[in-house]
Image (cartoon, rainbow over the protein chains, first blue to last red):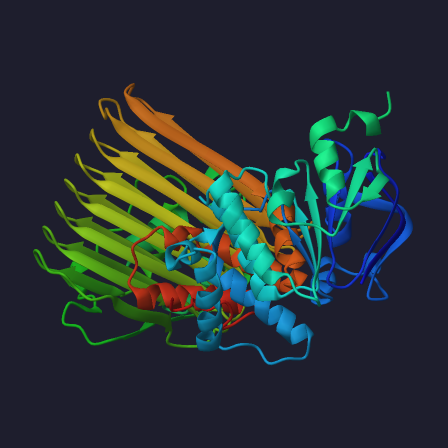
Length: 248
Length: 387
């Protein structure tokens, strides 16, 4: 599914953030990347989705054999990649439902499918929004504008449910959430787990992994994966902290 | 005679026997048209339209039947405004050719459905002058949607005199749209009585040169003027939106909102004036201009002009110029939306700001929406879902 080899990336000012990441995620697997602040967790997610502001200086990323780094952000989305953002962007004036319909139809069009008409889309939207506790009121508001932290993360999860990615990257999905909101979002994510869909869960805290239980856990430090293990590694880090993985 | 700016143009009009009002024409021949050394005209050059061979012609008015709206009887035509420095030449031109426009006369406490009217030249490559008048009696409420435009080189020049009696509320949409490289110069002078409200949105699209002026006189407490404009310009199009709100009495408010999108080598100017007279206390006057530059060769100018002679006043002005938000663009693209579609969606949201803020009838808002979408090349896209 996702094959990251020797990935190196820097910021526009030349600061190197990723120093050779190797990571393979097979179909249906859930991997977690944990690491201290500044270790390159969000950079990894952003480089995968093609966010401007980063320069890839080495390595490769393939999604089902296709070169991901060679694609525009929208092409990556069409290939089945989805990033749930740590800080979803507010877009004043663009109604949430219009945004969702535009995104779903763009992806369908790229896949050679007919666009969903308003009626069919609203039916699907309502069903999926309901399970995430998202009402019409929120869908009528502008994208992420005036949304609480929990609403933003639920809205990201709704986008994921509608776009049905094969490879979902969740960037600090737990940040800014209280325990109830975390549960709603985790339930939404877990409902999307399937043998066809893989997840990369990026988090600072082990807490999220109590709810979204990973198959594999990797520790990222200073732009490299320094240790990999099963879910018990997350608990270990929770107890001992990241100090042992950081250079003195 | 001195060789004033536009002398040839005036001589041609005279030669064609077009002059109806000799006194107004003599005054215009004396002063000529304003050139770019006149501060109010420093960004806009009338040389282009004045060089064109245009034939004087009448104004064609198409509108839904209404007893309250129709061609103006000559006796109702207002005298040309003389007190706006630098701008009166076009009003004199209008008066010289005795242009006849429309009269919209709304009786006391009337509540009208929106009135839609279209205005164009009666001939091709014409010079059309129109003097219009709008009167709302006490407590009347009306929405008037005006669409002005041609598909050739015609020049539409109008003055609209507006009288809003106490408690009257006029919502006015002026859609200035040219299919060709035409010229449109429109001036409006509303006078607002106690608690009267004037909400006007100007939308300017296409054309060669458009200059729209709004000069509102706030004559009594409780009045509010909302002057908004949406300027969408591409190619070598030129738009000059000019406002002048005069707070001549205390306790009233005004708000000016301008959104500009300029592409290719288009030029858009906003000259926003707020004048607060001595003793006009407790005035609030706000002004915000935001411009989106879609090309390196496009130009947007904002010139706020605030003259405040009273001390208990809250006035603000702000201007931003920029491109679309990179973050918002990326967010949309990361969801699979193409860059072109993402840009269109974001520009539409920006362009909607001036009219989304007005409480417009659904049909009017839908019409404006479609105008913007057509301009963006995405007609019919992004329809609102019925949730």
